[in-house]
Length: 152
Image 1: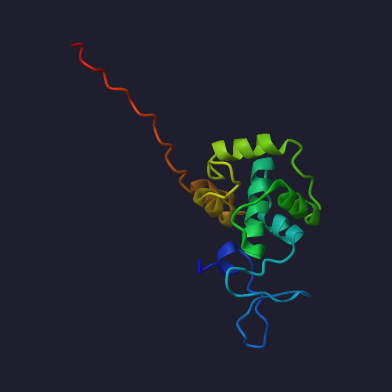
Image 2: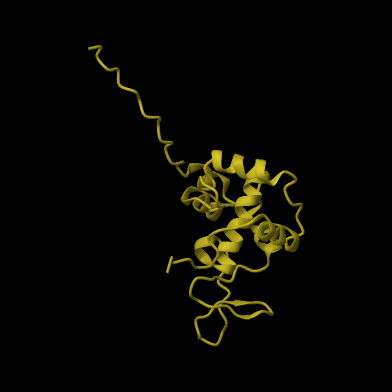
């Protein structure tokens, strides 16, 4: 359990009044309290987080899927569905935007599209831009230095 609560991602607690402890989504019935959290609709989540730019919008879509579906790895088609349900334009050049997101450390490097720890912390801090900008980016690993070998 990651300890994710609606309050920790900046949303009001939407627990039902039955005392069952399971978060509820309006009109959707109970949501499992295990790895999923009720965050509302995709458009509500995007409105709440107010992403500025395509890379932030991609990271918000990824975080939305993590919270609602418990997904760790994401595909273009899955994120297109999130953008469509949020009534947002999908990125025109998906591969370029993902590559730039990896360079800016929102996503882990590698073949799969996975939100990095920094990316998750940044999106969870939104819409408070001051708090989000205060999050330290991970240090990039430096290249290995070649040793000078003594001529023999």
